[in-house]
Length: 546
Image 1 (cartoon, rainbow, N blue to C red):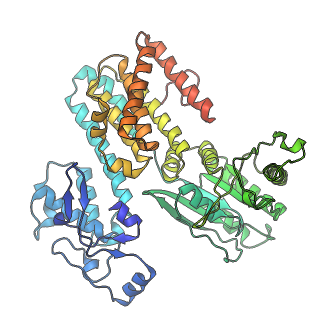
Image 2 (image 1 turned 90 degrees about the vertical axis):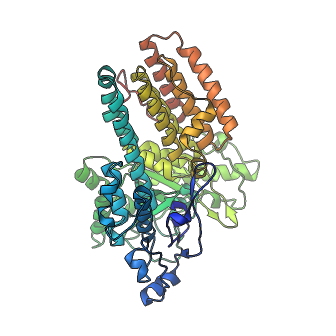
Image 3 (image 1 turned 60 degrees about the horizontal axis):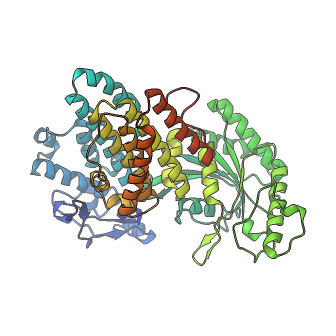
């Protein structure tokens, strides 16, 4: 259903008869005869009352009966389908359905009631919100189930790990808020599309310059970014009436980071830009007691002369030897000119930030010159301070390198948890399952939808855990296999090879390790990841990971 809605369609006829159980155990929606595409024409007909009502008794929401169906109308029908599946009946007393479904938890029953709220506004916002709530309900239920069967000694070990640390870890994701600053034509919308790997933002070429900011949500595979777009000050200054309201809007949004997007060849209104962004940063610190990270995104490097030369990669380091010699070909000429543009923009805005990334974000139907976008995604990730926003950003964007980094962090954290709970097999198995799920959630949805976590582990040959240091090796190997399959889109056979290779390597390393040696090995893995990608380590000094 999330996939259907993401393509701007809604089903309008969800009921048990239209849900098929496939041979692989997956559920699928069928019968798209009543499906409707959400278009401007649809909204016009909706306002005029000219939309045909599709009605399936007991499953259709009130607004759809009136010909006013929308996305959240499907949620009502889904909730009623759940009630039927749980109770075996639908009748006039369906409001009391919970009395006939005492086997499910209160949080799950609350979610089903929210799906069936009388008005669409009171239902979940979208299908991804439902999935996230189900994920949390499942984790909470698993934690309570594990604790209920543990004896007192094991419970004393497991409870603080499960209830505090793992619960916090599993919920570490939220929608990141990214402010964009730059004038029309700087390529802000193209930049958003390039990062998301999907055309999610309309590219504007004719919108007038204005200080009035706006915000909008971008969605990819159910993961979202909130974009707060401020179009630049132009010739305006602090005395302009719109100056302070524009700053206030960004402050109210509590953005995680600001991207200052400027074309490589454009000098723009340097003094006004510096004045606005300096004022914004000062007031942000006063309002939120934290620095606002600013990245200078030097865009449209593909248009730097010679414009027809485009043969990346280019050596764009400021220490490049290209500046010290005469160019011998068009590529070297372009490198020199791009570096000159970078140095000029850094000189213009040296008061604002030392963080910059040169990019090309052009991505159209017949032209694709995207370049250095993955490096920008990594720079954004490093500069966002909140871990939940970091992981949300990694899940929403398309770059595989960033997803690999986050998945490696998950892998290392899970290894630490399994080490802490190594004497409680129930807990280590739960952690390993959760690790696969979390990696899959930031990866390629098609891969996740085609296989369950349990099936994935079975195909790797994971049949249980032993009470020794090999639980750490197995957890690291499971993480490596999940990265191979879900992030890098390899086959299950290749993922199994990655699992076997990693487990063998780590078992050799951990076989005779003392407890303090195990922790040092995990710290070494952490340092290796940190140095490879230039990101802060999970371990700080001699402290624990969480």
